Amino acid sequence: MNISKVDQLNIEAYKNFVAVNYGSFLQSLEWGEWQEKNGKKAIRYIVEDETGTPILSAQFLRHALPFDKEYFYCAYGPVVNLKFKIEDCRLAIQELITKIHKDYPKTIFIRLEPTSTLPPITYSLRPSLHIQPASTILLDVTKPKEELLANMHPKTRYNIKVAEKHDVTVKQLQSKEEKQLAANLFKNTLTRRKLVSPSTDYYFELANYNTGGKNFSVNTFGAYLGDTLLACALTVDFNQTRTYLFGGSSTEHKNVMAPYLLHWTIIQDAKTQNIETYDWFGAEGAVSDGSGFARFKTGFGGTLKAYGGTYDIVFRPLIYKLYQLTRSLNRWLKHL
Image (cartoon, rainbow, N blue to C red; front, side, top):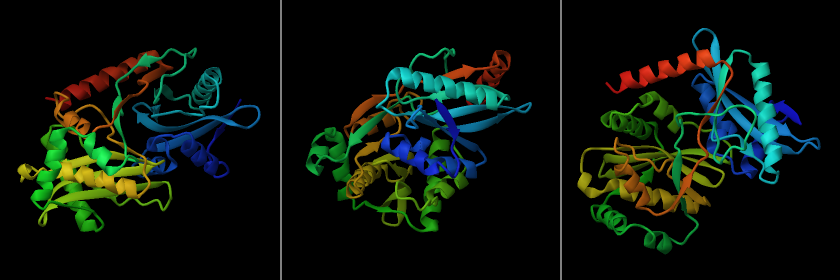
């Protein structure tokens, strides 16, 4: 097998491979570049067989740790060529891990978060906490509008009509002023729910992130009552999938049900853009009991998809244990 780092010579091959094999936007070149704008280093690999045919690709983010150590994280990856046998994929993953271990001796562990079950490898896989959602709800938006409505929960259809009756309007946000209001609402919503949130600047800069590529775009939508922004959503379009990444909602005028019309409009807009799937990016709820927001999502219909789990491949067990203890302490302090 041949393992190559992605550079300017094979960057197009990487992009094409991720696209053809239905990789997540988290494995896209554009998302890696966005992460690099935020201080992380993205490292990409392609593993090929003896004939030069790619077996898999993987985009890792390098995370710095104290004492000049680091770990590698592969979100919803590696991306695997489904035409290859499981044994070929197993060997490719194994050899890639070995190469990273050799090339980056400061690495404490590698975290893999595949979208499907990992084949058994000789390295020990330690189950770990999910960084990305462990499962999601996928809605086929290629279906006719009437069928999409029919598949919704009756309460969801009713609430869409309530929003329309109150003259709620939904539009794609274009100006920096509109996106700044949305960024504030994203931040305030998670803070209100006592969840960890990126900074307001992060949301604003992501809303304005434009790669110029044809296969990747970030869009922000807002639902208004008059001139008041009541709900907003930031989505990522990649590989004929629109992913709902962030959402915000106001505590004002809850009775007009603005979020329902917001997402119904986003879904209809996706159809006009030849998007095939609306990914709710998590079947779990956004509140402590995991139910409220999950019910909102499932009300639109769709199919539940479970991912393959999160696993750490540990090279230095003692330092890894110290890392785990520190992370547990940090999570406990954040919830005090």
